Amino acid sequence: MENERRDHGERGPSLITRAAAVLRALATSGRHGMALTAVARAVDLPNATVHRLLDQLIRERFAMRVEDTRHYAIGPLAYELGLAAAERFDIRRLLNPPLSALAAETAETVYLIQRSGNEAVCVDLIEGPSPVRVTTLTIGSRRPLGLGAGGLAILAALPPPEAEAVLHAVSHTISVDWHLSERFLQQSLDRTRETGFAVIRNRINPGVTAVGRSFRDGLGRVIAAITVAGVNRRMGAEDLPRLQAQLAQTALALEDILRSRRWPVFDAVPPSG
Image 1 (cartoon, rainbow, N blue to C red):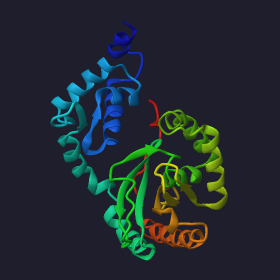
Image 2 (image 1 turned 135 degrees about the vertical axis):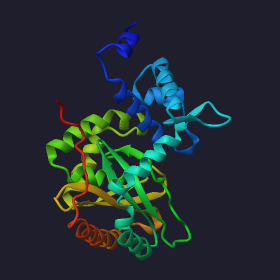
Image 3 (image 1 turned 180 degrees about the horizontal axis):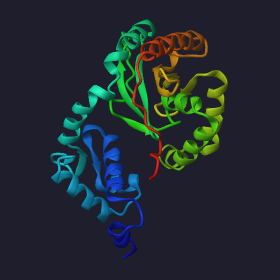
């Protein structure tokens, strides 16, 4: 009964807030989609509530059922609306030349990671010429800030009070889904602040090391990060100084590109009123 009151009454998250949470969860699932119970667990809502939300989203083509499974995925209307928003928000084409040059220079996979509230979104990737390629993310993948190298680099570059608030907000999810404690995340954050680079090894994908560096837009706002990822044997301690220098040089090139542009960035929590 209490769940029904939350679902239909004024208390609790609004319908739009819950629907947006469901869509963000589906965006993490890729083309295989997510089971209803997995969506419900991700958004911390009852199965019945999520089922009703999914039915409504399917009717509006924001979501869809994956063929021959009981999974749900992002629908075609989300893609169509994304096309309209791309002209204003898509920085991939603008920043591609320095990122492609970095991938060629390092021979590794390069990711462009953008902040979206308390999450880090992979908005582009460029594979280097290495015969053993590492692809740990796909375009559109979402993770909590502070988990991967790009999100950790972004988090470390934020003002400390804001970073601590984000870390507190995401630590439970990271602890449950990736078994990393808030203390461990805080230690990673402190190291990244000291060096200016996020380095993770075997944290998410065994045998893989990733190095991340944040960069800012023309107004000095932390907008995104670049990450280089490869197998451990090609990214050992002796390789880090070279990779970090390459990342720093690329970050400066990206900031030069953005300096003449005012790129839209939204706060993690929209203002009330």
